[in-house]
Every structure is written in C-alpha cells, then in structure tokens.
Amino acid sequence: MHLNKYSEVVERLENEEFEQVELGAEVYQQLLAIYLYQNKLADAKLLWMRVPANLKDDKELIQLNLLNIALQNNNYADFFKHIKYEWSERVKSPVEDLLNKQREELFKLMGSAYVSIYQHNLLELSLMSEDELKRVCAALNWTEELDGDRVILKPKVQEAPPTRGNDDQLLKLTEFVTFLEN
Image (cartoon, rainbow, N blue to C red; front, side, top):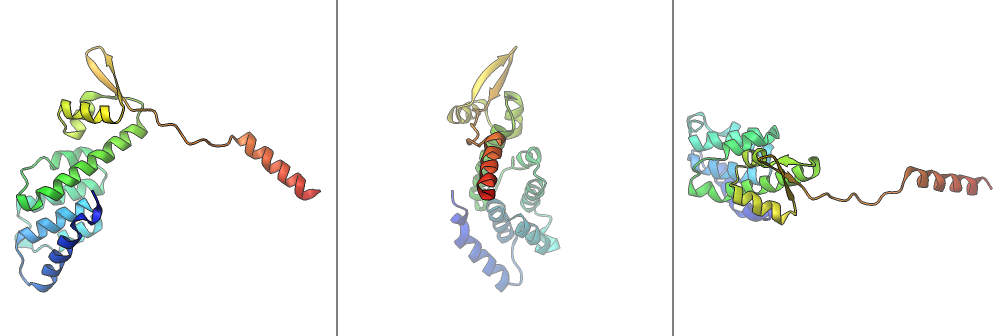
C-alpha cells in the first residue's frame, strides 16, 4: 500500500472543497478518511474544524473524528474500538487500509517492545479473530507457549545490529591520540 494511492482522489476532493460553497458530508467523510490513512493527522484536524456546524452531526464524520483523536493520542485501544463501525462504501476502502496499516504498526511495536504478551490481550487490542491472529503471528514467526489455560505469544527476537563495545572504541581512540602525539 502506497500513501499516494489516494492522491488523485484527495486532489479532486480538495478542489471541490475550494470551488464549491456548500458541500455534502460525503466529501468531508472521504477527505477525512484518506487523511487518516495518509497519516495527515493535522490536516484531518483542520478539516474537522472547517466542516460546517450543520454537518458535524453526521455519525460517520463523528466516528472518523474519533479515529483522528485516538491516532493523535496514540491510543490503540480507542482506535480499534472506534474503527468497529459500519462504514459507507465511499470511505470503506481507505478505512480498511488504515486498519491494516495500524495493525501492522501495532504488531511491529509489540514485537519490539514486549518479550511476551497474552493472546487474549492482543486479541482484545487488535480486534482480530483468533484465526486471523494465529495467521499473523505465524507469518511474523512468533511462538506460542501455554501458561495454564492461557496462551502467551512471544515475538521473534530481533537481533540488534552488531556494535562495537566501549572498550574497543576506547582502545581505538587511545591509539589514535597516541599516534597524533608522536
């Protein structure tokens, strides 16, 4: 998925917004959804501020704004809670792309931040079915362990890039200073 996947649509919608006086909620919904997908959270916030007051009662616009707030606050739990909604066809594609992108980011974060996590916690957080989660974990080479009746998922240990030890660097520096003094 490329971020410029929706660039032509955004350009057309932005032109519509500039050229027309009164727009329907549909234009704002599409623009907001695409901004969220493109991670243009400031643009999404400013768009929300430009939405006319009479359109701010639109349920889908409200839901998209809640997604924006959750993303701005890096609140995955709220994000996954608010994305669970019956989206209209005009915003369904960018919202699904956003969901997939956020899930990828979530698993990347979990893989680098945690040594292990209970399966039920990850299921709750990611709003995935158990089968979906198992497929994703298998693709990422995560392992499973049992803790009584609960499953613990362990991300694949990512090896740190080789770095020189402090002693090696100190030795090199000492040799260099000695060379310069002589």
